[in-house]
Image 1: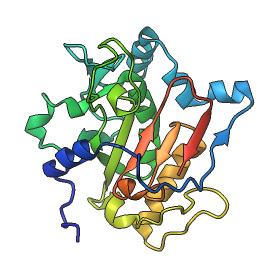
Image 2: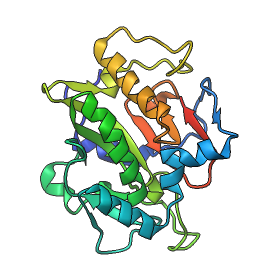
Image 3: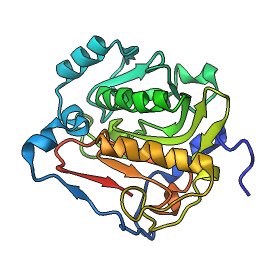
Length: 249
């Protein structure tokens, strides 16, 4: 049984240790890739635009939007534009599971500025659902090896381009927690015709939020408890430069 207060600092260490390794895991790709052969449609998608921006473009857009952030004082291996959020996005406070006093110096608060733009869009959806707080397990997670050189761009968590969302807090004080409220059904469909229907209201709202973000193509990848057991307690949401497809599973 998972303890009632499951989003704890201990879970951060566990999540980091486990990573997102899919090798050897049983993965069902029941939700197919969404191909976008129309180049204009592809390039208009937020995920594609943000992922392929240059650093100066990203900084200009973050500032134009009024996104509260600071650039890290030291380079972060694998992250092209490492930043930390210093305030709320559309009223939504996004932070790690660490206690507040530890966050200022923690690498788990770092993300690439490109992901921050995607999260700014995502927070507009969350705001409409009266979400005021997001707890994540990890955004930037340093690669275990620097064998390819410190200046090589990384992707997913080693590049600060992905977030693992564990729980969302509503203005009412209620939590939407992925683990307890989205029972895993590996191979189940998340969005569209034939999608799984969750019985519990909080689970349905979580699924609705995910599908709204998918409709707007804010992220290239969204992996849910339907993907595999490693994702039973979080939503992996990611943007990636160069790709021409989207996946929701």
